[in-house]
Every structure is written in structure tokens, then in C-alpha cells.
Image 1 (tube, rainbow over the protein chains, first blue to last red):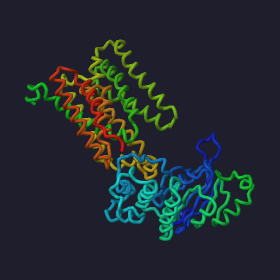
Image 2: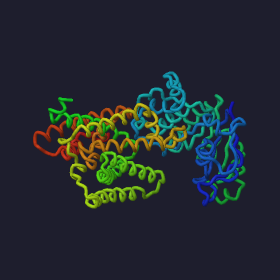
Image 3: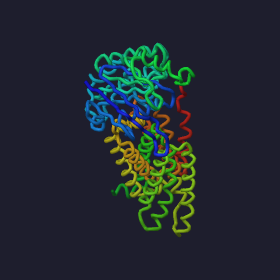
Length: 234
Length: 261
């Protein structure tokens, strides 16, 4: 069982610019589904990039089971925002999923089939990626992320282009992975009762505003000035 | 070797075949990676290097590859900076490069058949041209054999490729080098300017509904080969310049492009 602990992370994109993140601390435990909510520009994607090791924090440290992240990057996988992918690229679903093993051990057909079955799209294996619906594309991307040996999955706005039904189905799928012992950290624009699908919620706006169960976080934010003014999020 | 020396059209035919296969396959990679503008820049940067190499008494293709590479590096640097106006900067460098090439030719006092460099002169190609084409062909095949999955990953998800530990900058540089080699090798067949037609048009045909990059490359190469061979034969029959003829055939083949469903 793998835990990730990030302590007092501060990060800015250049020396001249103001920090995008300040003193952010996050703990990701195995078997939990954690939502990271915050307005646009709050630093959600930046935090995911730090936790995945793509960027190094200016201050603070990230450890996995007590060891520095740098030596354990394979334990963390990132599913990017859908806008960052070239969806017109000539590739099938199974081609996309097999890319999850580039730089890792050789993929067997059983593993590929297994990953597709786990996200419920094994019947779409031979279809081109650009012929799928938004929800099916997100599932395919999740299957690719699952091919890595990582135990901690960071999902950047996986539900952003999904209708309510597809969103609900997607959350049910990732709940199964959390129940199987993986740790999932998901950026989201959800608010209100939608957050009850998660075990924990972290509200971020450059720094951590609240951290706890969905009810605790909503209660805390409701009592804050920004919520009364209606400008905490969005 | 004796056959090559006695039948004048053997070398041009081999160059046509290899260029017709190579350029569309390379073009498929570049178009799916959204790098076609950079190809244009590289092709325009070749001329100053050719001129300087001739003035120094070096093989012009070496100079062409080097200056094409400088263009590739400039393009790479601009693309990495993610400047919103980088396309405008790239177009400026593109025009400036060809202008610089044209300017230094008389200044260096050298003789270059500019028309042949820019628009090709296939029917007078020699064994050196064929060797250049084979080198470019082999380099491209090696790149695909050793880095196919990585090339697919970068084309589909560049940031994800970085995150999974792929040396994206190194691979992009390798793509730039290979592109410069392909452009210089195509100099005799279609010319460094018209090569863009052979890089793009067959790709548009080959990409349609292709389930993988490899299949798209294969289809594009088949279309490219057909267009190039037809251009070669028509050029001989009607005594026309093959480079421009192949470019025009590329445009005409657009009618075969399937409409989007």
C-alpha cells in the first residue's frame, strides 16, 4: 500500500513571478478517492505536475512511503486534461492503451484486454479514438493510465466534458479502483452534493483553503468570506 | 553498375521510387505531430548552406543539411518557447533564409542552378543524388524501427510523453535531422521548395480513417509512389520538368480526398 505525502509545497513558474502555489500540504492514502477543487487558475494542474514529478517545487518535499518522489516516479501516473491530447491522431483504443507501457515492461494481450474490461470498453478496442464519444475517450485514457505500474493516479479534470450520466458512470469506475487499493486524486469543478462521491476533498486557491470530508470542506468554505461573496470558485 | 551507367533513366527512376516512398511517410509523421510549418522553414533554410558549401568546395548536400539543421533548431527553439506569435517569426525566418541564400550566391561568385535546387532536375540526377536519397531513406527507417512507439506517444500526448520519461526534445531533434536529410535528398527529384507537396498531399490521402500511424505511413507512401512514378513517366513522354509536374499531380490528386463524414 503506497502513500504520498507532500509538505509545504511552494512553486512559481519563474523567479520574477508570484508563486502559483504556497505552502500546500497534501496526503494521499491508499484506497481513497480525493477531489481537488478550486477556481480556474487556482494551481490544481500545477499541483498535479509537481506530485507527478514533472516539475520540482521551489520549497517543500514530496515523499512516497518515506522515500523521495524522484526515486519513485513510477509509483505515480498522471491522466492529462483532454484538451492536451491530439484526438485526431491515427490510433485505435488498444493502440492508445498500449502506450501506457512505453518505457515499462512489455504488454501482454491479456493485460490489455483486462484494462479495457476494467473501464468497460473492451468492445471498442479496434475503434479509432476520434470515433468515440467524450465519455468513451475518457475511459480509454483511464485504461492507458492503468497500464502503468503506478499505485497513485492523478486525474486532471477527467469529467470536464462529460454529461451527468457519463460523469456518474466514470466516477463509479474510479470508485472500484479506489476500493481495490489505489489512491486517486482528481481535479474537479464539482461543488455541492456532487462532492459526496469522494472520500476526501481538498479546496485549493494557491494555498489549501480546506481539507477533509466533503461535508467538512463545504461547511468550512461556507463559513469563509469568499463564499459569502460568492467568489471562492468559478 | 554497368546497367546504371548505360541506361540513363535508371538512377532517376530509383530516386523517384525512393523519394515517392520516403517523403509521404516522413510527411505523415510531421503532419500528425503538427510540424509542417517547421518543415517549410527547414526547406527554405537549405539554400544558404548549399551556396556556402559550394563556395568552400564541400559537397553542397552537407552544407544544405547543416543549414537545414540550423533551421530545424531555430524552429524547435521557437516551438518550445510557445510564443503565441511564433508562426509569424518562423515565416519571417523562412523568407529571410531564402533571401539570404539568393543574395550570397552572386556575392560568393559561385554558380548554382537555382531552378534545379528549388524545383528539382530529376532527369539529370547522378549516383551521388541516389546515395543521398538512400542515406535519408535508411535514417528514416532506423528512426521508425527504434522509436515508433515513442513517436506515436509524442504525437498523441506530448506532455504525457514527457511525464512517462521519454526524451521528447532528443526525439524532436532526431525528427528535425531526418527531415533536413529528406529535404536535401529530394532536391534532385522535386526540389527543396516543391517537396512540401510530396510531404503533404499523399499524407492527406493516407491518413483518412487510418487505424495507426504505421498504416497511415504505408498508405501515404503508396499514394506518393504512384504520383511520383506518374510524374516521372509523363515528364519523359512530354519532355516536361518532373518536379513541377509532380507538384501539379499532387494538387490534382486532391480530388481523390474523401469528404469528411
